[in-house]
Amino acid sequence: TATTTEGVCLSVECSMNHNINSDSDDIMQHDQTIERKNIELPEDLGKRSATLLLQEIYSGGCIDTSAQSFALLMMCLTPEDVSRIRLGQFTQYTIMSLRLYKEAFGVEFKLRADESGGKGSDDESDDGFASKRGGGQTVICSCLGIGYRNMARAST
Image 1 (cartoon, rainbow, N blue to C red):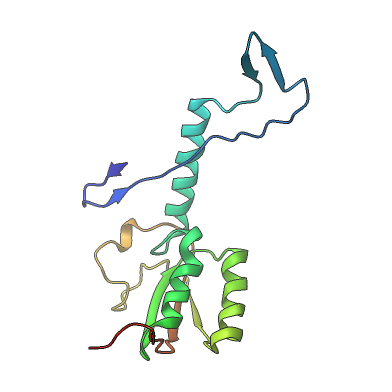
Image 2: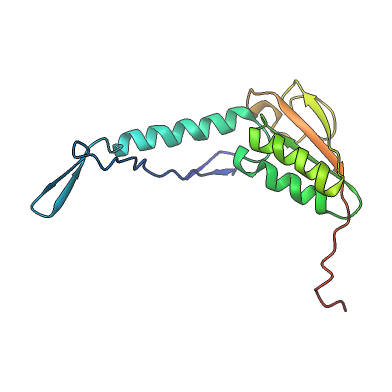
């Protein structure tokens, strides 16, 4: 975890790759201990996690790529009002989710490419951090929510 001079907290989690085959070449047993070959070193794990964090920062947007489809789903279910979010490069999962949301909820997103990466002077990107954003092209996604309500919840 690191904190920037502006007070923004950045953190990353990464786990080791445990791709071990059951071949005798990959696992050797000696006196009830298991020696594993091709295990990722801690230094390599740190380098890989730092690289992934820097890629997410460079791509821009408000959230990381693994949470894009969840944020878009929440936008679909909001009250009948316009929701907007700035996303970095779409993943294949996000693209398929957009198609599914259109089919299931009838919600169409308006996608507007923001070539400046949020560095423009319009009101939605003028937050004081424009010069510190990533260099990737971002996309402004907006939609009208369906006004989903939980009918099982007791109303007061």
